[in-house]
Length: 454
View (cartoon, rainbow, N blue to C red):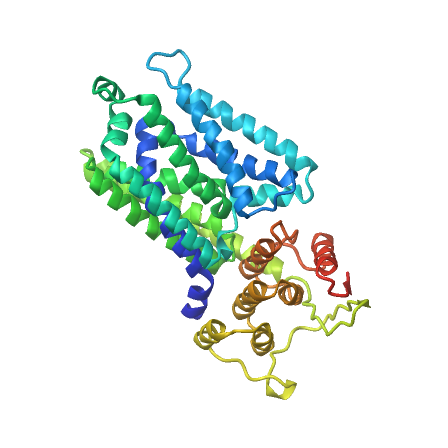
């Protein structure tokens, strides 16, 4: 496996994860200290509901209008959460937050049931499409996170006092409802922006997991922030690389890496602080056994998915005239060489340089014909979709016909969904010949007038 190909695929997702972990790990400390663990899930679900409501009214996904629609709904939730916090109450605030999440999820399901490609919407909301995130999106997210982070830094004393000792904050004359509202509102803006690219589950893990590990290690706030960020970056990188190696979805792969990191930190902390060395030894042995079983299962899953993606004959796309019918070839793909009229394949480093230097869609098409590996072609198709959606869609169909490994097929599907501003409808775990993919390809060909039938 060429390391350059790994970087080429996962670098944008890794950079975005660093941005997300940087602020979410800090906000997670506040969430845990306030004992409102599920506020993230509730606000994330409300943000997703806002996106769906906007979509029902004709607002495309992943647009500025869709984002501000979600922010407006999140602001309403911030008001509700602020008003439901009382010093003395028979109903804990966490119960209100949980009910809010359940109601928002139920309404979202009702809307999705009536929306086209509802199942794809559910998957995107839960897991996001972090694997194919644009650098512009990373830049916008970084700026927004920096602004919220600066706001929390300036007023850190007030936010920390309210989170750690609300009674002392009230005695000091602070307006708890005002600062609670500002906390929830800023938190909601961050969550809304994060859910659009990372999905509900991954954002929740970024918020809670690093904070839990940091709190287990140290009591000092500065060290908690540093440990949370450092461990989060490490687990994120391991998860993205592992999903690449095992051909697994990137989001769930990162979540699995955090699960492993939590167990490692828990075992280390327990062993360091344990007075009963025998008990500590048993815990270490149990943790090691769990790792063996977990990694074994991951490799089995990766092998099954890999066999599934290569279990049917590959199909090649010939040049199609408008209105022509696609003919599936049952021959195995042959490497393109100079005798076929194209240049021999070059290294992945050279591909990265060529892609960064491309200025026209014609150059990208030439690269697609020059390279044959799934790593290279998936990156080329994603680049083409940014330059010209129609040509990119045609190359995407041609690439997906070859039944590529799950990881690379999913990266192209994510790029297609981003270009279309709606789920593309393909299933990377199924062969291209399956009805779900045939129907998705037919819709794509009709949308961009590719002149192909399936």
